[in-house]
Amino acid sequence: MLASLHVKNMALIREAEVEFGPGLNIMTGETGAGKSIVIGAVNIALGTGNFRDYVPEDADYALVELIFTSENPHVYELLKEQELPYEDGEIILTRRYKGGRSTSKINGETVPVSFVRELASELIDIHGQHEHQSLLYAKNHLSILDSFARKETAPLLSTCRKQHRSYQKAKQEWEQAASSSQDRAKELDFLQYEIQEIQSAALRPGEDEELETSYRVMVNGQKIMEALSETGNLTGAGGYGGAEDEIGRAARALSAVRGYDETLGQLGSTLEDIESLVGEFNRGLSEYMDNLVYDAEALREIEERLDLINRLKAKYGNSIEEIQNACREKEARVEILMNYEEYLAGLRLTLDQSSQSLRATAKELSELRKKYALVLAEKIRNALIDLNFLDVQFEIAFEELAEPGEDGMDEICFLISMNPGLPLRPLGSVASGGELSRIMLAIKAVMADKDNIETLIFDEIDTGISGRTAQKVSEKMALIAGNHQILCITHLAQIAAMADRHYIIEKKPADSKTVTNIGLLTEEESVKELARILGGAKITDAVLENAREMRELAARMKAERNA
Image (cartoon, rainbow, N blue to C red; front, side, top):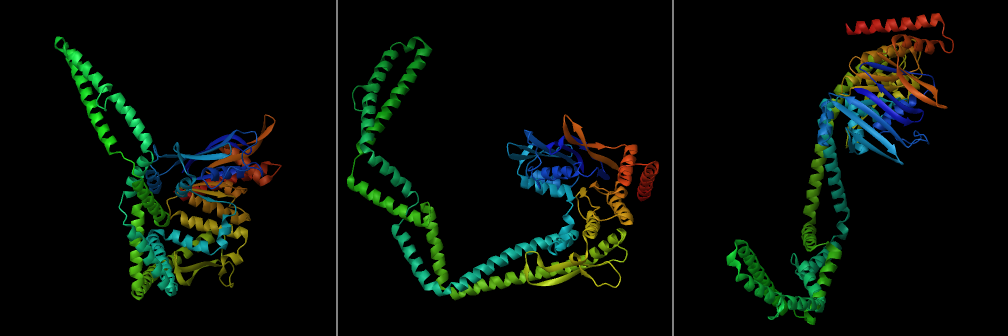
């Protein structure tokens, strides 16, 4: 669950920290008090929002931090995959903005925002003010059904997507091969020319590096010889004077006294080793100089060979190995072109087999979906009845696609009838904004029992409802809160009365500025806030008594639910 929220320098919030608890956490406040800032801050921390338009001009930086506790095994798996620390069951999501850039961290480790979003999908589900509009689009209905049936459909759906990729690849290869058959003779001639060009070069792996070394030596031969001659003169490689003779005389001088002290003996041995090393160096130097000759014809041949290799690299690859691989690929293509009809037949067979496998999996997936669709439709219908849709009918209609896609062969649509005698029609064509909001809540209630997400956020789920319907919505939210943590921003007293923890979001003057604060209310303060929602500007004793009665009724209902 979401244990705490820490916000700094976000719009009217200079700094606020609030701790949330299990069950139903309700946030209320006057219009414009800053409730949207709270949801905006949460979205920013989760990687689905940005700091733009939130950071005050006089702020050097902005910060949002969420602390979660979780028992979701998928959360452990994701953190383990990224080698992120996970201690005491806490996940700390931090997003900081400074100098026009934002950084995200999880448990102190910097991570890409894409991973924050991936992890957040396992921690929290946010129903924003306009999320219910997604129900207007039938493409979202399939994802809801698949989420409901995830335990059984997920493996088939994964297989279907892999098979669809294989099918698309096979289809593309076959269509490309079939359309290019007219140019086969021209392609064959060109490939044979390229193969001959590579083979006639008789390239040897490592040859280019050897030639480049030889070329550098020959081009710089005079400079090298001058340096070696000077070196030989100094070391005595010419057979007279130099370091070798001087070290030899030094060794002989030391040998006359080395018997008097063990240390002198060790120094004498070291000097003899040095004399031997210098002598070996001089012999190697003399041999190198004897072999170093300038041959204009050899240099020209090396230049021509390097030019040939570099031309082939420009056409076929950046190394001799790549050029030779290109040659083998072209030889394989020539083999195909020489036996093209057989090749086409093989591609067609692969295409047909991949299509059959895809259709078989899509059919199996469709049958499984239809089985679960009956269950889901009935659960949603019952949830809608609980939300004051008294004569509602709800079904999930299927239509088979002409060709299976990555999600199978099904196109589905939620159908609803909210009045007796009216036919079932697509959801988006008959439901108002307030009705869509309640339908989404019904779906959330059904789905809450099917996943491991522990925290749900509802931002003004009460849009377009009042009276008995609002009471039904509050009871449904209280029911969901029995198994999930819920954070809800509301304007309705019926929903606020159900709070297990009630928070007030309000604007107050501070240092000649207006700032937003978030505070946890006591029971009596909660009653007064309910009275404000019920009574508006003037709060009478009757309104206070009504608010207190609402809290008592809500407490009794929750106690009966938990009994």
